[in-house]
Image (cartoon, rainbow, N blue to C red; front, side, top):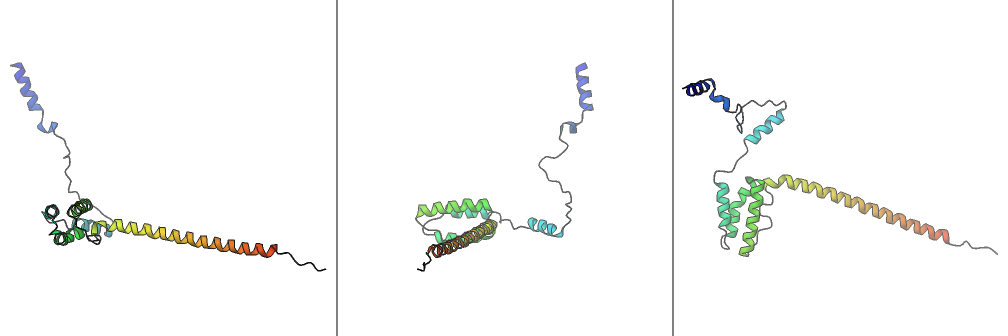
Length: 172
């Protein structure tokens, strides 16, 4: 009886919330976000209103890629290209392009050179690549100009050396 009464008193004293965490893990709070700059606020709104793929769009694209045949290859690519251009994310785009290229090799078909190359998901990467190429072209042009200057200076030095080496006629 003593044990039973002590157990009952312990249960009565302890509260069920004592063993539960006070913070809900993995749940986002709906606390207000304070932004000082209106541009940041507009950017946050644009991120929230980003167009997400329609439910089942990614699944239907995957299904289309898996169902590629030599007969429907170009029609299927034409039907899924708008999804790649506007809605596909970077990872889905990369994986799908690999799947399409492997299917094309297997079928003996060829992917068009401009298929989904201007996709929205690759815009930032393309901009960085274009900037890198522009810098390298400027460096190459500067190196070529420097080499041309060096060659001109060397030619001028050679001409000057020839004129200095000519013996002056001695009058007798």
